[in-house]
Length: 138
Image (tube, rainbow, N blue to C red; front, side):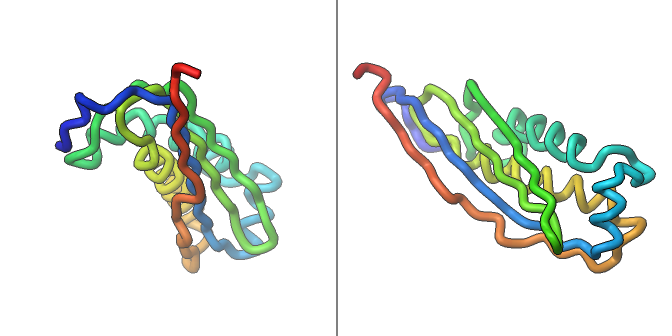
């Protein structure tokens, strides 16, 4: 791990997004909440939040962080679902890995919940879209 002990703690925020392409019939099942495994979007959002808390256990050299906020937004479109995650903490290192992990796991959860009805799903475009840090002492 990188030594961050001499870095000043700051308010840090990161946003990430990704997309899963789905068939129209699959999107209709999600809209009507008729998938066999339950509510796809709510489950994906919860899975993403859980993943954020486990990021340092999943990525070997990632620092454990005291996350102060994590949100997962899912948006149904014409050809799939867009997932956007926002993560915040007060710390000495960035929180972008938590935002990216949240996004990836939310998308994988959608995949898992729909794999019985859609064999053509494609996950892609997972990326960091913004990160920032601000001093805790204005």
